[in-house]
Image (tube, rainbow, N blue to C red; front, side):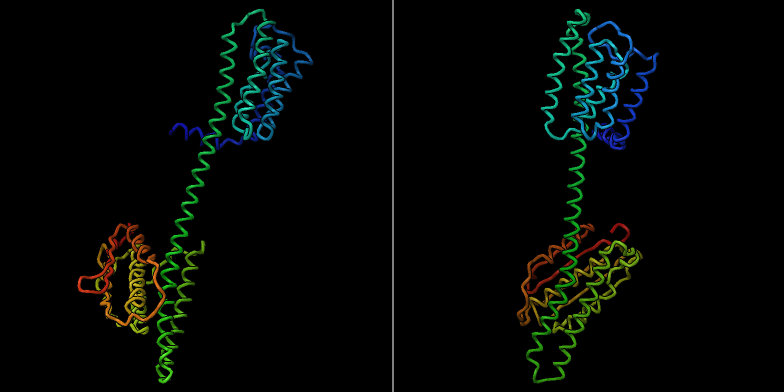
Length: 385
């Protein structure tokens, strides 16, 4: 497997659009040098014939089509094969005969459709050539030698086909990796949007519902509507922050999570009518990685669920910053009014579990024995997270 990948990487670095034309020109030039005459492939044992104009035609047919091998592989292979047959039947045995294995290698790699038909056509053309060379050579070579030469040519075609298959497999692997990466990124963006939008919109809905019953108290109505406005502005700010994160030019230094806004988050929930006790203890680690942002999202989602499903119930938020971890616990008594609000899909808690698991932490969410609901998270902090 390692050798296969190394060969594929080496082959991928080669610019075949230049290699094949260059090989063709070198073979063509070498075949014209008198010292190299009759030093090429000898098949059939025909006597060597003097180099003439027809030999030049045979050399050109074998070498020059290599320039278009990647674009017209079948046509170029046919021309090279014709030149090779002319070369051997007339006994020139030029250096240009080396072009046939190269043409088979390139055609095996480049042919996309009718691959089997092309291979069968070449094999069918080889049989009468071998028979003619055997007869004209008066049996100077045994049938086994013709078979051996054919196997060498078949090996070159097979090598090209193998390189093509590994290239296709590698392209498919990269496509799957890219698709998985896009899917994971879409999931991450969906979680961020869920965490940002759901909390603020839930708070706005609860505040707007409460404002409907405050028409007789203008001061309290004004406070409720101001809370709705402030929550909407915070939602816009958080959405802008998220869009900045999605910007590829967004600097790493600006990715600091908004844990400093935990108290603001709690105050916003209180203004929506949820009594919240907030305790934050400990000193954050110098480098928390993504732990601070995950802790913020845990608190945000838990308070959103409290507003949805236990509106008016006493809620407690405890956050402890340790040297190596952050622990979060959000509990709700569950004895509130349960004011109508949009139903949850359950994706929020599942997304939190994924976030915490990704950092190697622990997450739990469920009903308490005495009633209510509790969310707990232990999030490793530091360079690893």
